[in-house]
Amino acid sequence: MRKLFQNLIEKRRSYRKYTDEKVSKEDIEKIVKAGLLAPAGKNNKHWEFIVVQKPDLLKKLSNAKPVSAEFISEASFAVIVCGDSTINPNTWIEDATIAATYMQLQSEEMGIGSCWVHMRTPTHESGIMSCEFIKSEFNIPQYLSVECVLSFGYPNETREAREYGDFNKQVHFETYE
Ligand SMILES: Cc1cc2nc3c(=O)[nH]c(=O)nc-3n(C[C@H](O)[C@H](O)[C@H](O)COP(=O)(O)O)c2cc1C
View 1 (cartoon, rainbow, N blue to C red):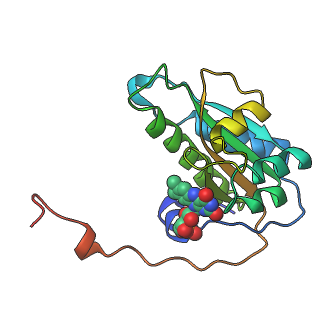
View 2 (view 1 turned 90 degrees about the horizontal axis):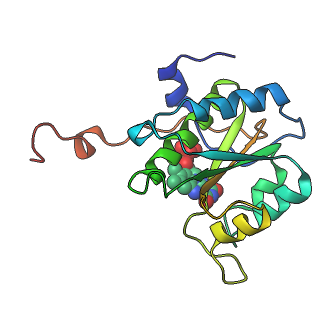
View 3 (view 1 turned 180 degrees about the vertical axis):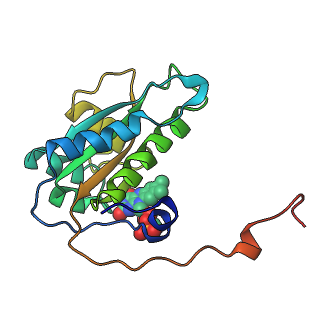
């Protein structure tokens, strides 16, 4: 089910409900490789991705913050998106978010739903930051920072395309007014 880019971005939605069908190893690799194709500041491609498929580990990720992550436990797989903030201290967040977006768009094209789960600033129920909780539970080395978690799976919900933003209010030419 290939979509042209315009169609892809017009129809793309976040999916938080997934069928039991597992995404194949080949398709997982294709999605993750899309992240590796993303641009990065100074071409320092410092990101590292941890692919999580085991149900107990998906459950652990879903508990990394108190709300808005619970659906990760139902995903076929998740990707912990990390960046090395020591290599690109000024742009590691931008670099990692572009890589995450590439993965989401690749999966959308393949008919595989995804949702971004913010993990950089929330807090785990223990009081430590969600990103630090994930680092310690998944043996992520200290030099890496966790930007977000992406959940993936075949959608078990139908979502309508969104309206565009307000062009006249949000887009300005030459100067603001
Ligand atoms: C930076 C960022 C952080 C997000 N964090 C979460 C999150 O923690 N949990 C969640 O369920 N959705 C999260 N989302 C998904 C947004 O809620 C979703 O993209 C937004 O509501 C627009 O819906 P759509 O993606 O279906 O167009 C996040 C999206 C972005 C871009």
